[in-house]
Length: 113
Length: 111
Image 1 (cartoon, helix red, strand yellow):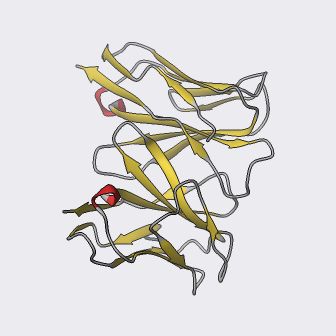
Image 2: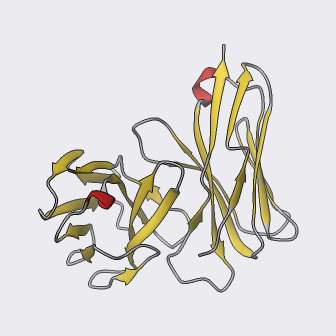
């Protein structure tokens, strides 16, 4: 099936540092979403992007829909301990089946106080 | 507003046993989904529903059945559990396909 390549797989950073992660694909997407999952919980929607080139912020989080529609980026500024978790990108393929989101394998973020 | 709830939270089955996972949402969402999450595999779609009385197959439907008799409920059934179905199962719902809201998950172990 279609794949989203999410990188990096894991990050271990110092509190206060900025974080960048991305998702890429060889296919074109109509929509990109970013989720965060805390241990033992379900994913929580952070940001949704609907247009190529779109840049959207949610507090310290900023995400962008790549201009080629094949990638998306998530940045977290001034990280804090509660940012720890797994971040997933997800996308709706152009021409894909209704109801089908494709998920990346996640970026595990650890923050050292 | 409870959002999306899942029952049970944990379950252990023996190979060959059957069970049903219940998902309920109180947001009047049309779309509902069942995913499984395995280590290193991300979330994979099992089945989904675009409205009451409808269901469709996702990426990994084999060994599972679903029913959506009421708009607010989406049931996932395992007729004959196998160890390969050991996983964490998540239900999600959405007004339309993109912004999906997830439940807390059901951790299933098949021995």
